[in-house]
Image (cartoon, rainbow, N blue to C red):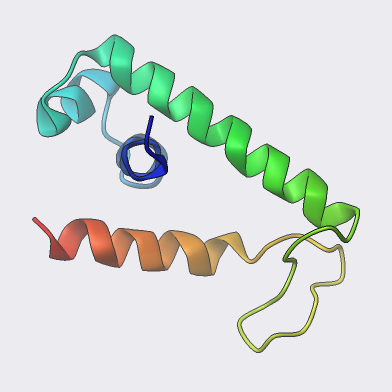
Length: 89
């Protein structure tokens, strides 16, 4: 499964507040497929955050400095993903 479809599902359900059924209609798939994609996307975010805590990846803020707790600047990521999703519509 492509990270793009997981990202799209996560943004629709978590950031935009669509139900699984509504997101499924938008993505032309079932609510169960959306649930699976959202679950996998959440797991990927957790994995990246855990790696950031150990200093293995990322953890940089927009200006390139590390955040105090080592987490990735998820707000920036969500903003850029949302721009890409909604500009394609």
